Length: 67
Image (spheres, rainbow, N blue to C red):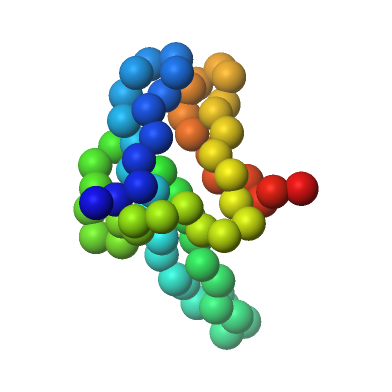
């Protein structure tokens, strides 16, 4: 089951996804993003060292590094 968050503003459920991508310089990075449906790349748990917050204007969830 994919990690999900319910928006406090809209009540819509968002699922966390992960994608590994190679940049032009050859550096490999991991991108985390939320989507409205659990598709390919959906992950089951929140990555270590990250927390979920919500954009107050749009209600979209954001993934931030813990301080």
